[in-house]
Length: 192
Image 1: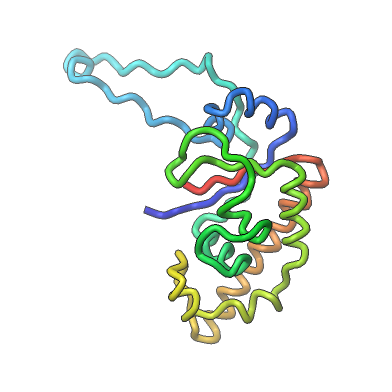
Image 2: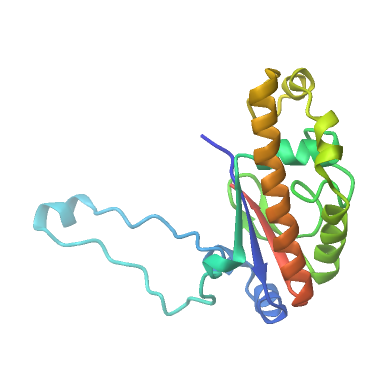
């Protein structure tokens, strides 16, 4: 099973509602409960299982334009930013730590809220990153020794391709956080 990471841009109004209804965070990020299973008698008599009522819904899911998917690259980016495979210092360790835990465990811990101030700190940190900083940190043997969830290559051409792919993701992160902070919004970090 893969560990994936997604970032969600949310408004101050959504933060307020989320603090009132923290258990509804999965609605906000678009996680849905599995459909109910049909009981033996329902199968026997052909009755469909009851669908859960949506009347208790607290949130519309975050718009696709306000989501940044890191997928499996989150762990290697965390390592390159923080120098560790575990929780790191703030703000370099923002992908694994920092912020306020909201709602139930989503598989690898609760979703974390980076309020507007923390999102600004991440934006400032990301703006200071460069390809020249990442390049010497990308050492395949060190990445493997740290048990990073990523298949790093030491072969020159493939290493360069991987670095360029990761740098492209960092530029996307920079744009995501710049847009988030310019609007005074916050960020949810979900590892699932």
